[in-house]
Image (tube, rainbow, N blue to C red; front, top):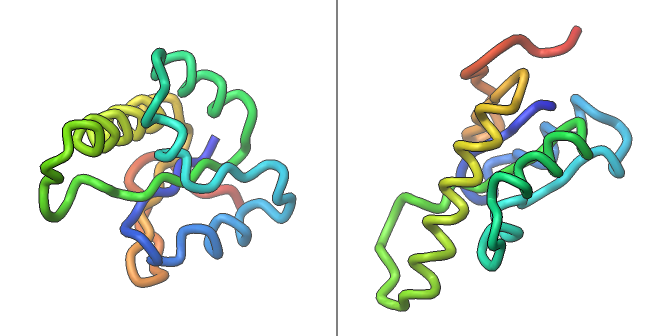
Length: 108
């Protein structure tokens, strides 16, 4: 599995499509699944086994929400990103449309 991370609107989905032409094999915005998930380990296992490419948006930078549920959702999203990175063969950060490989190698 290839994990692609980066800020909102940084080109993650477009880049994912260059790596995997089958949209059914791409999970976009996986961080949204983490908010109400009781078992992040199981979710990470499912996503890593089900998809060739998973994208997560970095949500930890910026103003800390005053709402406890929003803070918990951000915490869960960050933890899911860490779990997915551990399971991924390749981790890529996309910023301004530019990919930077953080772990592993890109497929040829």
